[in-house]
Length: 269
Length: 291
Image 1 (cartoon, chains in turn red, green):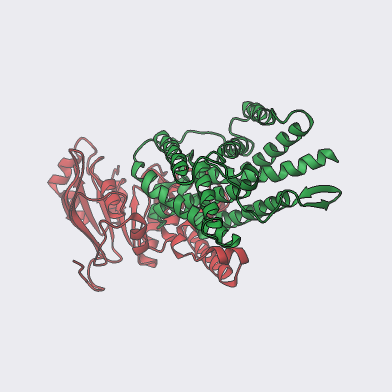
Image 2 (cartoon, chains in turn green, yellow):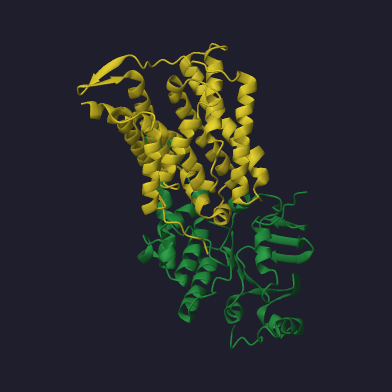
């Protein structure tokens, strides 16, 4: 069952995945490949199946058919926490933060996978406990520096502006130290300025940390600008998979978007 | 002097209500399920302790350890075989399920151990007294107070300082987010049920010398623990401790000066009064609908 693709193989492989809710097909026969360190996007009109696909990959949904491989290992059927432990992190379209906690606590929760704080260690505040605590906090500080979150570290996230909350969510995902980061509509609700910052952040993540990023695209201009490759979904099917310049001129893509928005990158979404 | 005597024993019984209530709150905080089987779970584990001590002849410390283990196992088992299968049900449905399970446990206890009242051999006596700051206090009162406080401290460590406690708080706030961060949500729920049952068992064991062991022994303590939780705020662990202590002291003082028959009534009237002013309880978070 298990295939080993070695270091050069694809990081994520979605093979013939379908997802049905009752009689409704959310995804039909979806194929998609992400290579290590790649920055790609999945776009499509509303309801095309981007979020369903992300949910399948992260184990929140189980595909009705097909397989998903991560680093050569089959992951469909694993629970969400096991998949996270393998190195897939994500953000959500509608921000899912621990809204009663501070920015710092949210990021620290992202370190959960790497924590070693058992009952005995905590009770006696052993050296191991302290060392671990310090290590986790140091890593979180680095991420906060990178994302410019230092000024809001002790603020309850529910009180932060929307764009800032999105960044906290990205930071929390990064704190898990993933190999693959799925960002579901990260720029939705952001101001133009925040969007510009986000582009830099995503590039930093991909280039400096070497993390593969899949952008669940919302803002077409941004997607065209930064993606190395774009997969277009329409009503749960993949209708295009190519570099931005080709995807942009694909008649099927233009048709899918007609009535939604024109495929004009100069105007954006 | 008489007054302080009443306060002190109220403090002790109140801390037991708090321990029972902590189990209810811990679970509610994490899963929003109110466990109406909490008292009966505690009763069954106390029955197990009784069997270990009498028929099996295990020494006291060993029996307590085994009983707490059994409580943990029962609690998490309950989650896996009863609560998890109905996870698609509404919250109210899950709560009703716990009420149904309470009846099952009550019935099972009668079948296995009989409906009669039994005495649990307990190493602390109600009739050996100590002089503390001029007050006469019995061994059991002091003992249960100390054990309650230690239990609370251990729970504090677990919830506030360990990886598991952090996971528990995360799960209570956002299930989906917790899962994608690698938190094994199912295991967190199961352990929470287990710890909650252990808290109930500690309460049951300490109450057993006073209430004696019977299938209905936890009825009143469960109600008081629940009341303590409501008074302090259902989602606040410090709240239920304060609630339990207030409840214990008020009913004891009233019982001492006015009437023992009405001491519970007065306690509940007081709770109603507090809830009229603060519906969310003393330390509870204001109710708000998630949008």
